[in-house]
Image (cartoon, rainbow, N blue to C red; front, top):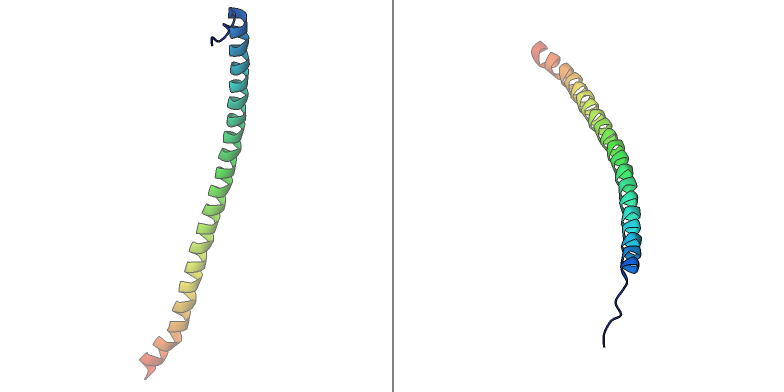
Length: 79
């Protein structure tokens, strides 16, 4: 069994179709990549915001602990 030989024109048409498909895939991947980059930036910003809030909360807690300990220190020195 022999396969029919494609003419040069048919081969070029097949190649052109495949190239068009690949270009479409490439365009889709580029668009997806851009969306992912934007989402990554949004997530990084959210992460930075959460880290700052965590730091602020830690500082507030430390301040509260220091103020709570202060009356104890005053009582100890007056005894």
